[in-house]
Length: 120
Length: 113
Image (tube, rainbow over the protein chains, first blue to last red):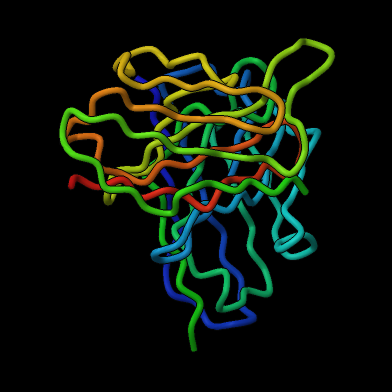
């Protein structure tokens, strides 16, 4: 079955960096785009970034542009989110999510998420 | 950016009764190239990640009970639960995937009256 397992979350001080990983299984990873979406405690969903199936195209939310970088290694079925210059407002559960096979920006499956806490 | 606005923010409905959630987008999400509405609905139960219920505004995902239905076009959409069950307690989000950045509504919390 489809699985997305996030890791790498934790507590980090403002201004520091963190790298999240998303390990995929149960589907042909190289055929799908992958998103990161986050949810601050008690709040709604905020889309963060997307990477195309071949890794050549990326898009970012304005709130993270220039600070976050999404990448993937199709040989390892893994997507990464490098988060630099972290701010307290980046505190959230970060979900890895699969893009739909249609090639649109639709998200059809979500991982369980990993919590990132930015605090001094 | 396309702003998505849901109403109401919260809703309490009796078991077996109908629940209706509205979602309006700041601009049309109907594509002229394929005549599809790029609008999805997600359910997020407490402590769980979101789950895709409906795509293209009205196409129910496999395994989603038929009491869930989506309707609307252009910039005005509705999610209807025809007869509320206890397991439907959740927060529901609409999302446009017409253009980047992808945007979500603020969510509607559905409870049992």
